[in-house]
Image (tube, rainbow, N blue to C red):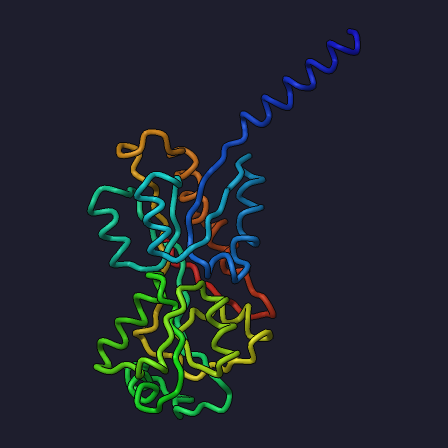
Length: 265
């Protein structure tokens, strides 16, 4: 076998390997990316299944929009009402529970609104509104943004226009902004944990059942979008909801603290 033949075989082998490796496009929320969870989960899945997961990390609203348009194969988000509508409207199939964490209200250590230790998120929002303290909203139609807006509606109040800032940014950027402006914000606990050292913000309100934050995974409907990688989407859904995937989620403990809890049934 001459050198040219060896090179030809090598090129064909590389091409065959690349072709054999599935690419799965995943839209997901900034919390799963910013917290480090996906970096913890995906390498194990990719190695086991000979796949490559391309992650697009945005707010839940945008993640679902990408899935609706067939720009991804599968989506992992946290806004149950929007997820159910997405499936009911025929855009997604095989929705499954994956995990949960919770929302918290973070803010300056000085706590000018005096909400520290309060376990009633609606009462806390009323106090923040009446205090004149600044509040940073994500303002991006993410799951967190939708939840925050529902709290203000239940509170029947909202900070004055000058005190309420709609950032249109991801959770990490909003936490950084809240630290700079000594403002309050609603955040998922996982992203707060990833940014705690950088921001110095304190957990001021936690423990209300209204702050429960479940995540679901949904395959894009292959009937609507025949070009999607439904096989790859199913691989990821089956793995992340399997005992192996669920244990991997439970073992994600940066600084020894568990940030996500298995929910698959």
